[in-house]
Length: 459
Image (tube, rainbow, N blue to C red):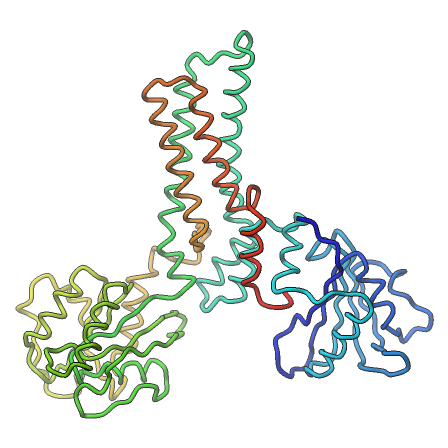
């Protein structure tokens, strides 16, 4: 995959702001901007300046001054893309940014595709593929945990782990091939113990990485949270309270919520993908029953269920049905309306941890601090923390790790069955190549295009 065009794009978000940036990258980047840049120092040309320097002047179209700017020149290979790169810092109005971009393109640049700057950084060896993917994860981070994990990957945390394992594997592939080619000088006697040690060490490393995926996904995407309960228990009031706005309709009429209502919430630093559902009860209303069935279906896919109970009403068969539905899930019971006379009693229900029952009042906001604390305990304390552990957050990485793990297990089976050593090489090479998919050392062009097409424009 080769790149030859000089590309340009607006790298700041749409909308008026104090500053906007037009980024230009490629062999002709300096030459193109030189054509339209007029320094405040007479006779200064960008082609003659040192790398990583800033220059004040104007962008001009013929005799017309378009904007007063700062121009940053970064020459290859010491730039984000590894190519000559020029960034034009303009005033941040969308009209002027668009005019400057059009002028750059008119003078020889090509409009960049989404993610094309980062793709060039990958193709030019400035980033491996896992680091490139982490760029967008950093941009899209919705909480501190996700940002910390993404930055760790951007700095090469995942890459280092993968390269360590691949280094071990390729050594043994080379050793086996050399021994088979030159058996007089390289002996395979006792080699089964050596390779068994390597396999045990690296399958353990891969398994540890795979075991981080569930927590990694939660960090990246947020906790998939479903609010369940009987009609009029206070589910929609809870959602509104967590959002800080009247998002869901709240009335005294039972069955107001007929469909699901989804929101992404930053709940005091916790990212929740939260879904309010129809009240669960036996009903003859066909439309309401559809909502009830949908609520049950969504609950099966949740990371966390918040079961809202109207504490002013007795526990009935609908509550028992909900408890049966959530018994194998992670859940928190909110005993709502605790500002009223409490009638609901869970003491007779076995296996319901007391720490998972919180007295709550959606009307008064009482119990929100305990809810937040309990969610942190369930999903973050001791398992997802600001430490140096590497988390797998990308489903593509997980699939490659699983395939590599299975290939190494096949090698273990071959060793235990005392198969000839040349049988080992096939599965070892497959494991090596699967890990290479993560960092981009053995990846198809189509996959590269697909990955970078998901990036934002200008990055």
